[in-house]
Image 1: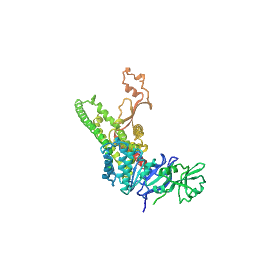
Image 2: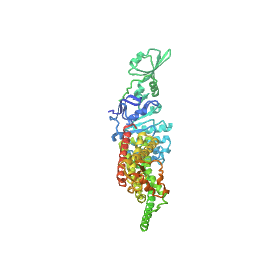
Image 3: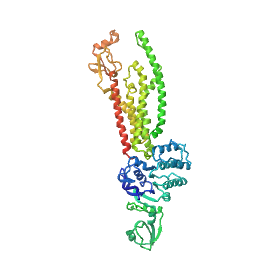
Image 4: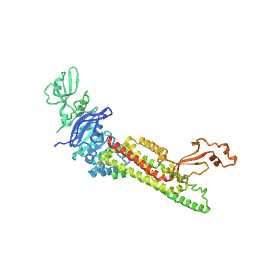
Length: 295
Length: 309
């Protein structure tokens, strides 16, 4: 049984007359690490805040493990969140934050959390305000993981980290998911960060959902076709054309194959995640906002 | 949740306790001393048969100032406890951290507000108990506890002010979500409320009594009353400019000036709230400020829970 950790339909958020996110329907199956990709201002934070219940949708609905977000104990126990600003009590020590986590979370895993921070050589008796940005992020992540949520939402967690700290952070995350019963959604504007750890991808562009689905399936269905110049109508009838580049003699087409490709005159090249994302973002009009669900 | 409240506010509690302890020592020592001086002075003047020109408490300027300054205690509670309680957390974003632990927002907010209001009530009460006790002697000596400056620091009203100021700071912080503007709004709002009440509302809580006597007679205003207006009135019109003596009453004529003015129709009119209304006024004003506090707490509650984080 493949339950969905996150399910949204027609989800939208409006600030004044501006839509920060609109008509977003997506599913994230349980147990995934889902990368949420989009340029700055694409609506990533808006989406995450609605998932965790910190902000209310202007349109559509959200379901987390089948239930809409609510100010009830079962919901707040299930969902962890790490905001982009990494809010911590700056005057408290790291140890204070661990006590905070233990006192406010019935499922708190004290040993694992201490172990995690100890391995990273985070000084327990130091005030959080005096730690480096990377260390603070690690403390906040440890706090979020120590709570043992079933769904963890991380908003641009690696943005402030140097490459080494980034690697440690992502390793911590992967290990936690491997330990079981955890679904993670983490956002970033850098595809390369996510490609390493994610098995599910959601792409937002200009407040709209571009594509979402399993990474493997996405890689297996998106190709670059190169061939002699021709009319692309036949191709568009069977498949989804994302972007095309023409020279007088040659045409390049970035496509999502929606079935077998019958025309043998195309030269087919595989795409990596970044190229796929760029192909979608280069579109003048986004593809229909329907996420693929991989079972 | 209890631990979180304690950890976040223990420093404030310690500072408040230390400040109160120092204040209490000063109040107790001077209070006892003043009572002593006053009683021995009364004994002396009973023996002499006259109590004029006692001139007591000359060296007491400092403690009198400190006691009068307790008028600012509610405002300090509003600024340091009210605004920081929720507003500063929303300013620095730490409310998001608290709200994504396993405690519901409603419980977090109820704990925050409960602690704030309890602390405001306890601290406000502790200060007014000390001030009211200390003021027993000066109250008997000067008979001025109904004057606005004294009324607001004694009895039960300071507790109402403390609750109101705390709720004002809380609501300003919760609605504005920025510390500095919330502090400014709290100061302006609190001062405006105090000025409005003591100038335009308290004098009219009950219709003032009027003492209207010929100019040569003593007013029958009970000691300890709050004098709202004192006028010299001629033919029903209050004399607002400086009184120029009519020629026939000039002192060099040798007659009694007051008697002469009285004969010409001059009267002395006092509007006042009698001393007997002191406690009813205290309770009415206390109740009013508690009601305002309740409204502000409700505003804060819905502003936090109904709006996006």
